[in-house]
Image (cartoon, rainbow, N blue to C red):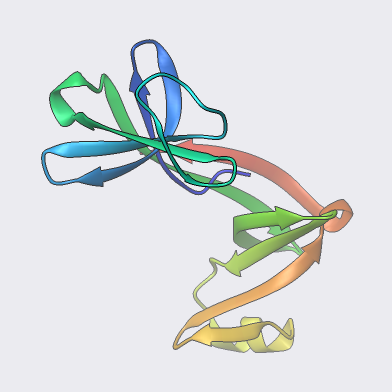
Length: 120
């Protein structure tokens, strides 16, 4: 499940983070010009002008008949955030209040339908 920036650089897509006039590119394996920041996490900073595409990708789904964003995945469970904007519905679903007006939960992947990525 993807949720965050991606960038195309030299014909490949990377997880990314814009940083002013630069873009930080991330990968899970070592490569020339990438520095290890943690185990299985490498970064390279490139000028924004070298990136051919920068987009923000979100994964959407339906769970219990309501719209959600997928924030992550672990052991057959999806971390979902309610996207319906109606507090009474979030409360009826028993979602955790993450922040004011932000409701999240762990949903069994088997119960989630309509998984789809959107990039802007």
